[in-house]
Amino acid sequence: MARAKQLTLWVADQPGVLGEIASALGEKKTNIVAVMGATEGGGGAVRMVVDKPATARKVFASHGWRVTEEEVLAVTLSDSPGALGRVASKLGRAGVNIDYVYVGSAGSARKLNAYLGVSDLKAALKAAR
Image (cartoon, rainbow, N blue to C red; front, top):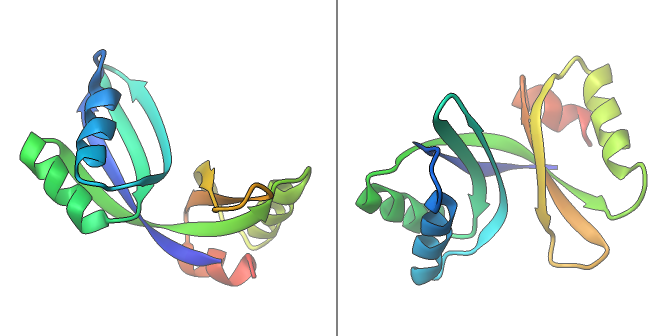
């Protein structure tokens, strides 16, 4: 279990925005390690973990996209039934609420990384051991 820097872009809910974001990062050789996006009320939130956060922040600023940065819990899971359940149950027993979760590649066909926005990162790091 570890901490990861998550960048959240706050963008308009319109066709092509995710393509612009991903293409802009690709042009600067910045890899998206994990991503999730959702829209609500005319706006969009795109949460992501990238391999070069400083470069990504510069890319976003140059396009005028509002970005925030948060720390999230990063957990490497086996790609097998029940793996996420075991970690989520540990967090629940520790009283840690999970606000959202998304996954990305862990560089192995049998592993994935889960990124969890949690109510108490310090408690989550302790509980997820």
